[in-house]
Image (cartoon, rainbow, N blue to C red; front, side):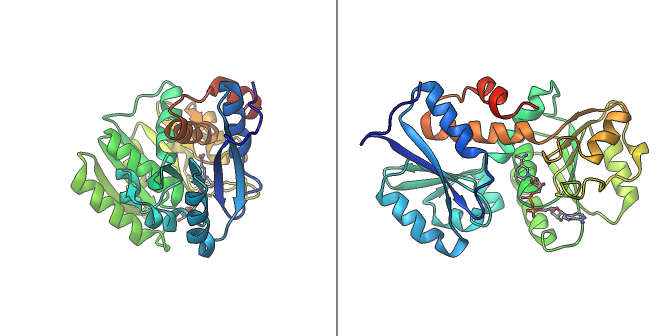
Length: 289
Ligand code: NAD
């Protein structure tokens, strides 16, 4: 039941640029309506340099919390009073909780990933993972998976601007967790083959394969895709990337990034409201084919 907007209605929102494509307003407003919660969730197009002013305004207006998408994920961590362990390691966040003017930063993408994997009936705690990528999505996955207790994570990235930051994150995780994180240059196919051979899960955390370049895949040697390997792609457009198609044809269990997106939202919602998002309803309305 939708609660009418009154003088009591609380504000939740998304900050970033662009934001108009985001599914977050639909997902969070539906969840509030279903639970009869007196919040409304809006999306505001805010460039990075305007984030400090926007945050100051939201604090003064007592907004309960907000999500942050690019390009504000790093600066938002610096504007928070406290940061979660995962956000501290990556220096990025996608969720702020405002407790009477005190801001806490969290990153829920990795939480969303772990829950999406679990929902596929795949157990990865204590196992090995091969992760492709070192950008926003891949870093969040890397940190949460290490904190949650994977045994070993082999991360591959091309030597682009993300690489030095990946090495820093890996060093922190090797110091602070029991998970062994090994960073590889993507240009070493024999290391990639060996890592996948020893992994239960292969994750594409890069944008390679995303529309419109749907014929692209980082795994060109499909003999690496064996039937007992779970293959996860963070991409949700297209719903089946070339990698996932190749993996399915090789007999692997596969999953795309849709439920990671859903469950990162559910984790943010829980932080703001203390309530569980009614995910089955949200799935049916916004995440079914
Ligand atoms: P990003 O720009 O932060 O990172 C891009 C990554 O792709 C880097 O690791 C980069 O090295 C790699 N890359 C790009 N082009 C490459 C190439 N030609 N060869 C090899 N590597 C290449 O992007 P991001 O925010 O991490 O997003 C990555 C993908 O994840 C996007 O498709 C995005 O839609 C998706 N995503 C999904 C979710 C979800 O909840 N499912 C969340 C965030 C992002």
